[in-house]
Image (cartoon, rainbow, N blue to C red; front, top):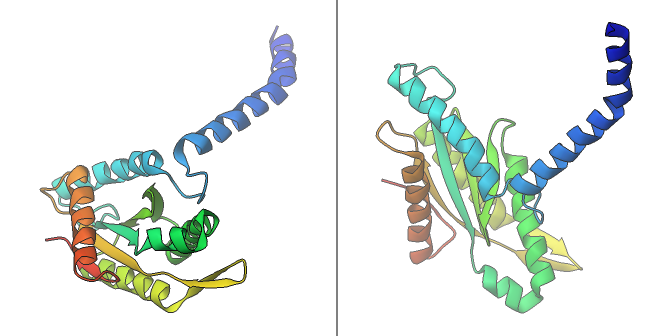
Length: 200
């Protein structure tokens, strides 16, 4: 009897492998942005909220040494992105978004996350990082965009970004963190763009 079951399972193994691959493909469609290959809004929120819950647990148990006890949200907006689309075309605009996503991904550690929030807005989750360090990281990334150009169809195009930061505090919800980082980013845009601001 057990041999028959084993043979049946063995025969079904290729089918199971195909199903697993299909599930992985469906998850990629559901949680990743097709244009930039980074997490989409839904995928980012799903993962980030899990880490936030662990952070709340660590803080509530006074576990300040936990890697989940300190983290930050960074909100990025590409400055004057509409002008890039209007001047060079939407293909170039898409290339610019891919360039932003690649730059952010390359600058992050393996356990950090980057997602496309929507349009020309990106969001980064920095784990195991203190207040001052997150500010340094954000400004270093801002400077990298300021000092570099991306090449598309023989055109060299400059981009800058406005960045808002929100750090985890015991009284905050994850939704509060997102709102505060977003608000800080818009404050930067109101005062000249190409800058970094920490939410109060």
